[in-house]
Image (tube, rainbow, N blue to C red):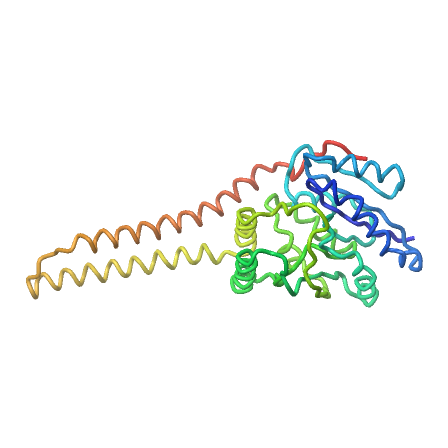
Length: 309
């Protein structure tokens, strides 16, 4: 019999653990027809509530439920990687515990896998329920990534994705510490079918992603899958050097031909502040890439396990 592994990253989701389980079981009855077994891997990302205890209650009733608890909060990227690393299934699906990834889509996703796809991914066609400012910057981010990166990252893409074992193994072969899974999905390739659906709000609780966390996450994505910012800093440096050279020539010519005194300290101050700002901006870009390299060369583990049930 083949096996489907359902990976469920959790951080302070005690209210949604049982709800997700019930909704999932309701929508996987088709597995019996396909002679498939099921395993559910809850990855507790250092939750401060009773998430782990709620999973253990499910484990007492259903041996298909498994728990992997981190020693602290390592982030969703680490939780997804841990799930992929511990999943034994011939097919693996990533899903959020808050039910924003509808389990009702699973039968349709499997139908595309049977047609020969290596992966079936999901994307939201609307952002109903999200703050307008967050939705605006999210769209800007995806547009920017399309222009500066060779890796395909779809607008509205979710981590909700069904994959073959071959694709999972390819993702696990990428051991990088600074992970941006949406980009990794596109980088490894494989034939992918996209399913669109309307945004679904959380079942219970509040989102753990605020604007600042999403901004930092977007920086991770840009630096992980594009070197365009580095090229941009080089181009800006060259442009300002040329401008400075032309301005020096202009001042010299004006002094010797027209005898104009060199004056205008306010404009000089503005130019110095502008060029200094550009220099700091470019230094910041270099710093981002250097910081990523610094974390990579340490070879620290992506996560640390506290408990495995």
